[in-house]
Image (cartoon, rainbow, N blue to C red):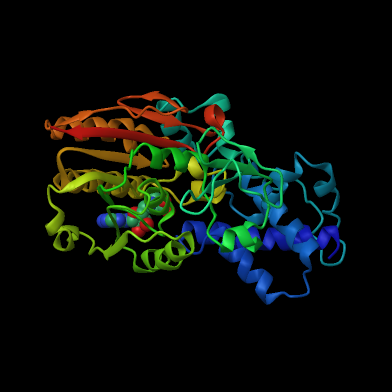
Length: 392
Ligand SMILES: C[S@@+](CC[C@H](N)C(=O)[O-])C[C@H]1O[C@@H](n2cnc3c(N)ncnc32)[C@H](O)[C@@H]1O
């Protein structure tokens, strides 16, 4: 593909991505993967260039652009080489006309920028939300040790005790070490969220929003496979992904339970007041993970945010009933908005006088309300709010 054809194709892909974000359809990654599958003429260099162009254009725009062309023109303001291909050549974008609309720059749609600023995410903190994310792995202590694990690339230890940072773009899943379950791809912030649980061998721990089990696997390793680890979620597909991952990781103490939305307690009644720890890795706006999903900024609206905060509050209440006296509840979101973090947790504590905050002692983050907040700027991790409370 010529450089001009790449830019025009990226514009068409951006059109689809914008439309899909507004109708809450497929994410950008899936739209790209599908296009690559259906257009085999695009070789690996073309695919890489298209991906770069599309994501750079998404990052360059704050509010939702009206068209893919307007988004690309925003990127062209920063890159003369892109601007130069708007020359009407074959397969390339049409020649620029007078007063063509250019998408607005910024961090996010304005309403969301304001919400972030209220949570003291502005200036360099806000800018870092759109950086490129590093690639971090967690060494699985059920099968290996960080100090002795040999890898095909240079790896830097992170602040997390079992964490390593490797070059972005590394195809980790092609490595024998990955197939043998010696490591998992896991952001450092996420590894610290697991450490906040303080999981110990022999305990009964519930991972209430386990999804595909990223955190469950870290908990199983911390428990050394001893004790009961119950992984639950309302999403059957995500939960089903856990079994093969657990098998690969050699995690043998995990039991999965599929929950019915709004009737979660039906399959958890035997655990009421029994868990040593309950982790709520709650569904959230994901404002802390825009480095990986920059177009997620265009999917969020006030209604969705209200639905999420209500669900978080309900899950906190539900989890409270599962914790045994003396046990702990750990609340985590990958959001940097206080309504999903510090304020949500304050509200929980004021509803439940039998719980007292006990801030986890982590090597990263800064205090936010009664918990800890990690940010891409301060910690180089995804953004997280992590809080813990003990039941009297
Ligand atoms: C942030 S994700 C969890 C990610 C996962 N813990 C990990 O580390 O890979 C939130 C999860 O909450 C689940 N969820 C949504 N509503 C729920 C509910 N009512 N009860 C339990 N889980 C729910 C979603 O399906 C999603 O998998």
